[in-house]
Amino acid sequence: MSEEGLEPGDGQSLKRDLIASIPSLRAFAVSICGNPDRADDLVQETLVKAWGSLGSFAEGTNLTAWLFTILRNIYYSEFRKRRREAPDPDGAIAARLVAPDSQHAHMDFLDFREALQKLPLDQREALILVAASGMSYEEAADICGCAPGTMKSRVNRARNRLNELMSLPARPGRESAEARPAVALTPASRD
Image (cartoon, rainbow, N blue to C red; front, side):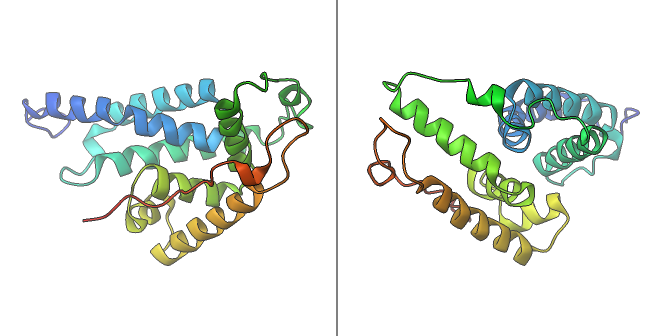
């Protein structure tokens, strides 16, 4: 046995599994922090922390859930440290970022991302874990440290609120909200 408690051949398999989880970790990180650059930093910090803590990983358990929990804990620790910082409190900088009207799909995506960021963190987190990452309610509940029923409630409230936010009247010069495709985030099929 190596000092991490894994067989010598297991290192390559674990390394492949860690690498395979990066896209999911990044998507989750972007969803909770709303900044792709910061999300990349969170993923990197998560992988470094996970690699250093491989001895505490229980073989046979869900590696992705373990990594999501580490990422979430890093985010909340930093959030507590930075809660008094307000680099763009009124959204003035974000409001100056404009794309031409000819990019409807991109603009619809930006509208969706903006609406997603308006959800409370617990609802946004639940929606991303269940609907976008394809986790079961039970897996997502384990990551967030709540009951599966609470997770179901959060996902339902998030979907309803997101639907309300996406149904708001369109900006002048843009197509109406009714003409946009509905956002349908449903959990991936379960075995």
